[in-house]
Image (cartoon, rainbow, N blue to C red):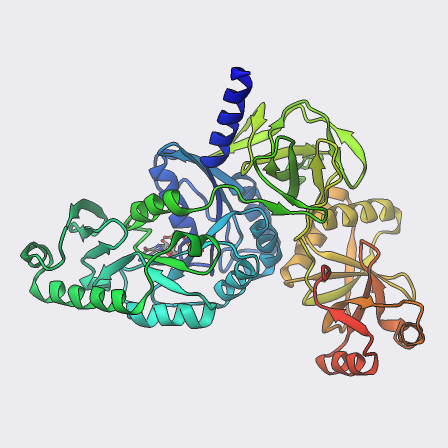
Amino acid sequence: MQAICNKIMSFIQEINRRRTFGIVSHPDAGKTTLTEKLLLFGGAIQEAGAVKSNKIKKGATSDFMEIERQRGISVATSVLAFEYNGIKINILDTPGHKDFAEDTFRTLTAVDSVIVVIDVAKGVEEQTEKLVKVCRMRNIPIIVFINKMDREGKDAFDLLDEIEQKLGLKVTPLSFPIGMGYDFKGIYNIWENNINLFSGDSRKNIEDTIEISDLASTELNTLIGDDAAQTLRDEIELVEGVYPEFDKEKYLNGDLQPVFFGSALNNFGVRELLDCFVEIAPKPRPKQSEERLVKPEEEKFTGFVFKIHANMDPNHRDRLAFIKIVSGEFKRNTPYLHVRHNKRLKFSSPNAFFAEKKQIVDISFPGDIVGLHDTGNFKIGDTLTEGEIINYRGIPSFSPEHFRYINNADPLKSKQLYKGIDQLMDEGVAQLFTLELNGRKVIGTVGALQYEVIQYRLEHEYGAKCTYENLNVHKACWIESEDEKNEEFKEFKRVKQRFLAKDKQNQLVFFADSYFSLQMTEQKYPSIKFHLTSEFN
Ligand code: G4P
């Protein structure tokens, strides 16, 4: 009896000490630098420069070579795990490039919270807006880190206003900068009530933290000078008057977002961020499935695939499916139910991730990510359980932005071509549609870059060749009709036959060739609903 109690206790402790999160930002705001500094604090890496940026470098020799390079790196950085003060932290990597936005959206289904990095000079940028919108839709708790305080940038209050307005957040600063750019003196840490001075000729050193019990004390004047001390006092008074007090519950519900200031490059303000993060960020959260809400503490294992990495080594058809564990313990060599295929699968070498290394593990807990070697069984969104029929939801497809016909350029290799397309679609590289009228295949993508990726990978991994033909489509809309037998729906199908296709799940999709034609069609067929995502009920 005692042994069972101890086992349950240690299972609960393992859940409680996990924090699984993502860092999101517009490219160049400092996501990679911040990730690296967090890993340095965790002792997971020993030197700066160890974490490779997975962004597409500007002016790259050739886009697809660059993508291959990036893909190689992103296998290593998909999950970066480390321990800090007894807390197991899992950072899930999210690509910043807009053409890979869908990868990032999918990864956001596997995080329990996020840190949003904003460049103090650039403020809120386009990608940040899009990503935060998705986080807000899912009520994901958000901490904001305003980076590059060692550079001239926007006024702190203006920036906080901009964040509230453009991102629709309700912020409360938990640290506040003392000056910026050349005059950047450090940070007043509202959360810990101390001052952290930025100094050193190289402006690269971290000065000791100085406890300051009272902002009114003359000690502050001695530390940062009379003018800066007075400005700080005035600013903190304003902060206290204008912004709500931090409330953990509100933060966890996605109703309040704490803000930190710092300079990731200079390792400044990062420890404060991390210390607060481990204290307030959520442990693994319950997840909604189509059938019911699943809690991490449940005894039985469940998890879902949010990412697939394939064929990095052309000599082996290796695919790694990344599973987020939602509940129970995931154990090596245990048969689990692959719900979509209704078959049991066993995994002899599940990988866990520690910093940039993979290692085989016997047991993993809710919040953890395991990488499973896959021979083509998985696609994104698949659920694994101990036997219960559960389907995790929340990985919808969004309407692509670009559409092209794909043609087979080597008739002798059509089998390879279709296998390649099939597997690349399972990985979530793009979406495949089949036209109702003539069965022609159409590839839809978020960015134009993906067409090069697909062509290159089909040739190098599957030995198949393809060409593309442009197709004028504005948006793909998933169709919903209350009654598919009614006259209106029948007429819609007849009149619009040329514009109808099926997606890979066999759902009916309407290709609208312009914004105008979509509006006209919606008006003409009021009983039919046109959705821009594949998940609408
Ligand atoms: P990303 O992953 O969000 O795309 O950004 P990344 O960390 O790669 O940072 C983008 C650039 O901003 C890098 O410079 C990085 O050194 C710089 N940076 C990051 N944090 C700070 C900061 O706190 N202060 C200042 N001044 N710069 C910062 P780069 O020249 O593009 O790259 P690199 O040659 O330094 O690697």
